[in-house]
Image 1 (cartoon, rainbow, N blue to C red):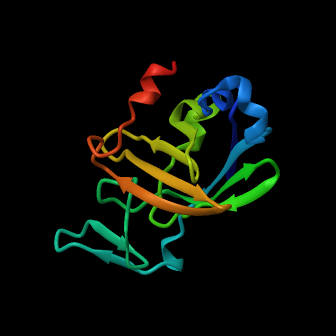
Image 2: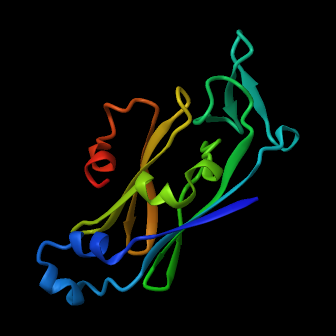
Length: 164
């Protein structure tokens, strides 16, 4: 099991508000994202394959993070902490996040912004051709995964390159 935590620093939190001098009114004190990756055990899941024998569905859900092979790992938990309030994020279908490769650069794979309803988190897990992007919206301490895709044109990830 590998657990990594992304702590969004002051610069990122300040950039989330329209007027940085107003940041106190938004009560943005601490924001972190904790991810847990575990080995994937195919015997504990229902696996559906294509006629070509590629893994198509796991537990009747599309598989992200492989190019048709059996996943090696799965995202077991994603938990956002907003000022001490924990919000679990939908991780269905999210495999091979490669947390062991990211190390200290894991924060470069994520972006969080404040919206009029709450927050939006965008990110990517990459492993070459099996990479994928995703987005969660947080409204009233409830999460909704609004995007998960292999098509990078759908998810604007320019922020990943501009922030470095």
